[in-house]
Image 1 (spheres, one colour):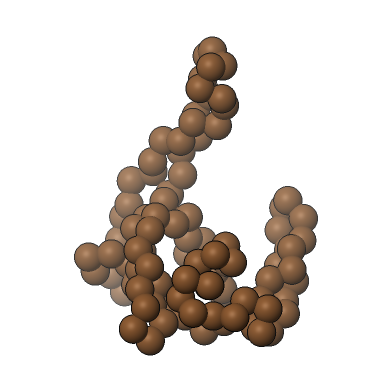
Image 2 (cartoon, rainbow, N blue to C red):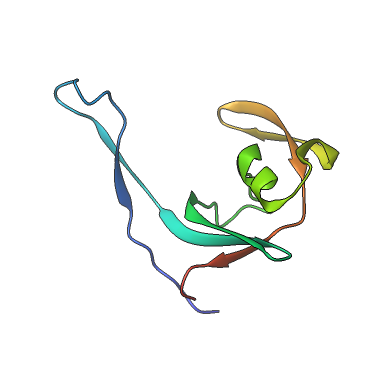
Length: 96
């Protein structure tokens, strides 16, 4: 398997007026999501060890999914749980 490395990108986590500003570094990568002839390109924080990836509902709508028609699933993590709707979508890392 080919190893791919992406740099961590710096994101501000405090209001711009707060001094000193606080930052976090995140492994955000450029991706494309596909469904039939629709494509969305954006930067995403992708968990490479996850069985499934969660994206905001507006992305599903732009791809043509009816969000609430997907299979319901509860995703749980350190921050708690959230109800999600599963849809089959294809993901491609940019330029790979």
